[in-house]
Length: 365
Image 1 (cartoon, rainbow, N blue to C red):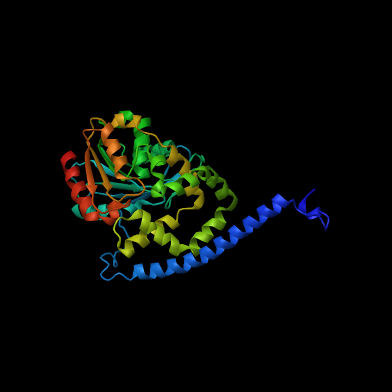
Image 2: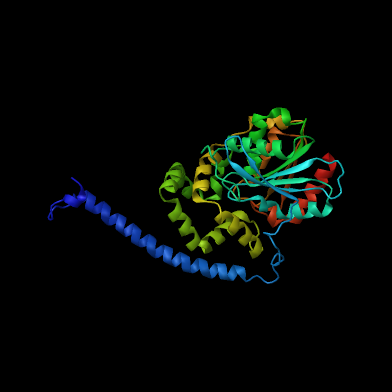
């Protein structure tokens, strides 16, 4: 019998009454806690935004020039947004293809794009990963790293049909490059003549717990497989809630994306905007593949190819130990640790990253 048809005097079992009472108390406490938390977070955001001399306050992050804009359709039908910057002073150097990370878009490489455009001696290709930026969601529904490797292959086939290539990947973008190496090892050494891996992992994500306190991480881990279901049932509602709680999102972006205690508010806002444009469906469906990612065997394809590994010393999402593990499999690779920087190291410490990146590109071009 459904609850709606219970007799008027029907009573719930004592155990059930107790459970309902406890649940109600928890909800009440949670509601009160959230109200307080939101009041505190808004005050913190206002204080954080009031940073005198923000060096990036006048940056036009969403205004990046390109010479060609196109849509590349992957094998599974996913449409990928691509932008190409041609070399103004061609010097026969490899094309650099940039692959961004989880919940971001091609804007991730804003400062690298800026300095290399000014140099003008190398062609560059940028694209938004499936479900991110201006690319469509994966048509196949296979939100896994292997599918991302195939998307990268489609971009390379369409934009760099011949000549040498340098692949630059950040976070999930680095994992994408590893998946591509696993699927197409013959490209490395012949077509791909250099690789840059920034703030990424070959398969230790489940050990990092995304920088969460140990107790919280242990408690939350069993629920990650359920997030995809919740997104299907109420993704739109969750997306609307994210807009309402944008202050909290800003603070979390600052906490988990940056290492400096007082980063540029403009940079934090730029990263948070990229995060907020990525749908909950995309975020939740990629979580499982991030936690099960294991591409250590794929690193063998990179042996003999110059590899630069960059990581911030305060990266909570893919800590330094992840990069050191990559070096254990690729002992000839170069490891550069950027002090006092978090996960979006190429934005937060652009000068330091470029100081390592540009000489590496010059050596292998």
